[in-house]
Image (cartoon, rainbow, N blue to C red; front, side):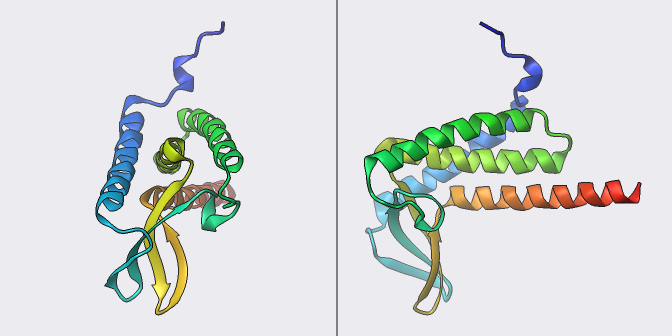
Length: 165
């Protein structure tokens, strides 16, 4: 059996930050599930409400077929993707790239943990304009989005640096 090389692992600070993101996500999901009724609106500001629901699919309820094969199939695919993302994190070249992978991995693990418990992901942050619902998501989804923004910003910055050289 081949031994895992240290340079293929993320550093300690990165791992702690990922765990912190997972804890924030799972704690908020736990609190919302405990104190908010399913499918009930709690409006905070005109475009932001709490609305507890669950999703057996992925983003924007794509593949939300409410069956065990889809749910756990997505779980297995997600675990494989997270292993690859850890490899990319270990080889990240700068802080912005590291932060991108940290946020994406933290969000992914948060949703994988949630899906692993009961086959669905808890969503509760509803963005809407009046009666028009845009989407419902959770902190893990937000972390993944922030990570994607960091990743894109890093790629743009990298491209600009290479064209100026």
